Image (cartoon, one colour):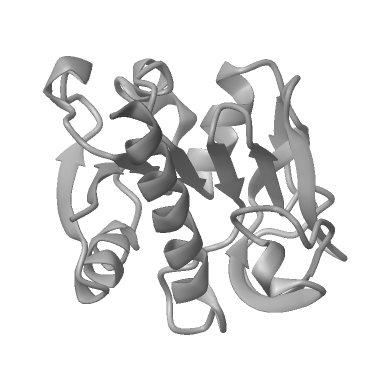
Length: 189
């Protein structure tokens, strides 16, 4: 069974990320972002959303654990910031129902949602420039980088919240991430 650690960056929806995965039959643990990296024993990591880039704990170190990573909202932003991208204030703050254009129908995380999906998103801060090695995989009228992927490193990010009911195909995003984790786990054995 696939094991996923959801890293708690103190966001208001983190428990929903854990619940969504648990309800899909995943062996999932919720861990504080101060958990030492050597205590992470999972097939994949979800970096949750949260309120503050100054309170990301050990998240930068988790990016070096050689397991797939999915960053959600702040989780995506911290990936971009740590790996050489650029994060800045969004022009549209607050939560909203957003139509997201999927740019790559071959992307392992979002390709199955092509050509578009409706999501629940917050854009107080957002990725302005993806890091080297990443591709922008989704965009919208309110955010230029709604999602990004580095398929070589199996690191992905979405600006929106797949764990909430307002995101129409959120479970599919998690299913696709689990497929990536399963493939990587088999390759490591």
